[in-house]
Image (cartoon, rainbow, N blue to C red; front, side, top):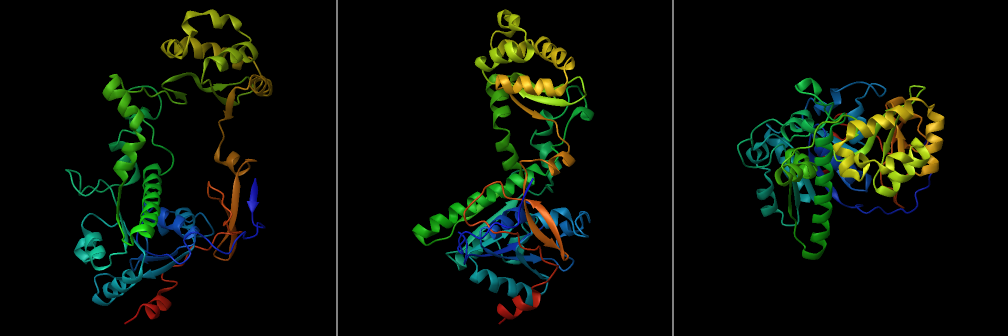
Length: 389
């Protein structure tokens, strides 16, 4: 595991230096987006309710702070505003008047009722880019429904294709991270960056609108197309692939689980000869092409399971390596912490160092450390002075 604490700042300039983002945000989707903007150099002012973003209270895992909070609120300025008070609402309006980007993920219609709806703001500030993150979009029957990650995973069909085979909700599987929230935040990030590029050419801001449901539905494109036009929904197959065989987890003699993936007939041939040492399978009609192997999955997977069960994992890994078969271990979170490919970056939480997985993209403007996540209203006095009347 590499901790990026000594990497020098390659350049003093980051892509979003000088960009002001005002984020009226809470929970995960919008904070994820704004945190990545902050990582790229944007100044992000986070507007919190007087009691704070409720994500602060999700847990106390990181030196007394919530893991979610530490992860997606680094590098921001925090100010607590009571937007039911005219003075605080006026202060928000003055901030937005100077902003390049305004992000909000309040309940449906709440921003409009406060007078900070995206269309109204862009009419007053033509260069402003607005980003509205919602649960189900801005119209339709479910417009007013509350939308949290697991609810959207269920509503979009994600859980229907995840989990173990079998009937009943007990066989369904939630994706183990807040996938819908994270993906919506990423989509918002892409939209905002594109809007900033467009503004460079046109001088005008744009409206970016992202929904959790739409983000999840787009992830479901392959199952959607398979079902609508192929007539059959993918089955839940646990740690297997619904469209490819063999592709899944198999247990070795010493109890270690290894996931293998066969993508084409050349790989299948090498796998049979060098890993399974069963060249006879190459002449078996049940294995003649991926479609046949999927149709006879029980037979194919049974042959793989039998071979793996008779060998220690070290031998299996040596054979997989020799055959150039793609494989991976079924690791725990503890295994991830010690993983040789994991890259982390240092940040400070309540005066103590913390290592956080770094961004999945590396750039020449990466900094040696992540900035701290702010205490509630840590910048309130300074921001009130800066944007005061």
